Length: 238
Image (cartoon, rainbow, N blue to C red; front, side, top):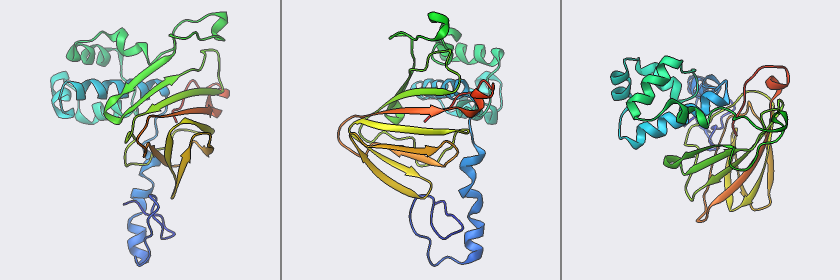
């Protein structure tokens, strides 16, 4: 359990009764989400695809790292989107999983689109299927858009981002539940959102979410990218 110095846990459960020293000792866990912050949506989406491929092949991190001649730590960081994979590393991983490098990059990079990148047609949007988490994501943002992202997430019953809180960059995010329900943890609070409910939070706020219901949930996120507006070519995820 991750606790805050105020005596409340990040997950929302009370830590009343703990001594001040015990609460101070728990602080590193409370800030761990801030330390593991993906810097680029390309790295994040590519890492998610590599992790999905590894799971599909029934391979452990250690096995793949050893077979590819890289450190376990580097592969772990690439899968979490914390490190960018070099061209050489991408070729080695693609060969190990028996896929093409182009197939790995297809959903991580913008494809050429019309009208100077201001239009992204149906069928050209970046898409990733995170079946082990029960989540699929489609990014609708046209390539020319620099300061906003638009993402649609489809979440199967029980699907979630996991038990760990995460953060992404700067800016703000606004979402609306199109169908089903969403359990959203933001900081030390938990909210149950239903069809038609909207919400917002700062991208730097630790969070996680899941579908607690028995039907598929669909959510649209609009994400402001302060760093992109300033000319830093990074993107975020909800």
